Image 1 (cartoon, helix red, strand yellow):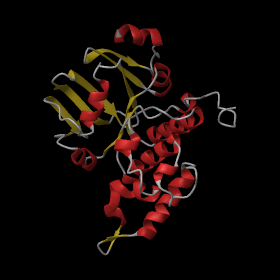
Image 2 (cartoon, one colour):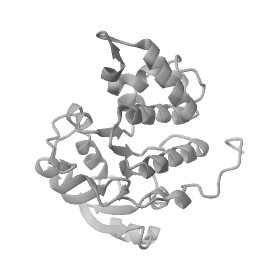
Image 3 (cartoon, one colour):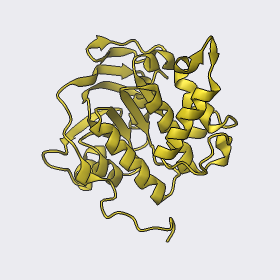
Image 4 (cartoon, one colour):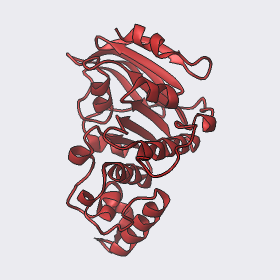
Length: 262
C-alpha cells in the first residue's frame, strides 16, 4: 500500500544470484588504522558481493572510507587487480576504478543544487569533453538514458537533484559511478532513508552489477539485508574481524552473525 504496487516475493533477488569469478579485484592484507580498525584481510572477487557486519564502533564504516581514499591505512597493503594501491585521496581511488556510495548521499554523494545530468557526469567529465569544453548535448543523452534505465522520477534530468526523493537521489549516485566505468563499488548503507519500493529497485541493480562482473563491498542497515544480498559475510567486533561466512556454501543465520558481533 505504501509504494502502490505488489512487492516481489524474492525481495533481495536471491533467485538471480550468480557465481563470482576466481579473479581478485581488490585484495586487503593486514590493514590497520589507529583507533579505527586493525589487522583486516580479505579478497574481493569480480562479481562478488561481500558484506561487512558489525555494531556501531566495530570499525566497518571506517574501513569503507579508507578504501574510498578518505583515511589512508597506517599499516598493511591494498592491491587492485594485483597492483599495489596507495590510498592518498578519493582521486587515487577513483583513478583505480573504485567508486564510493556514502552514507550521507546529500553531503558526500551529490552536489544537490546541480541538475541530475551534471551529477551523473561529474566523475567522468573527460569522456564528455569536446574541443576542450564539456558537451552538454552528450550530458543530456547520457542522463536521459540513465533516467530511463533506472526509472528515475521525476524523469527530467534538468531538474536540480534536491527535487528528487531519497530513493531517486540514490539512483543518481549509482548511475554516476556505473557511467564512470568503475570496477569496484563500495556501498556504505546504500538503502538508508529510502522506502521499501525503492530499496527493491536498488537491490535489483546491485544484483545486475554483480552479474556483470562488478566487485561490490557492502555495509548494510540490517542483518536481513546483508544475508539477502551477500555471497560472503565478514563480521567485525572491537575493530577487527571475528568471523567469515561463505553464504554460497551455507548461509549463516542472524544468530550466527550476532554471536560473532557481540
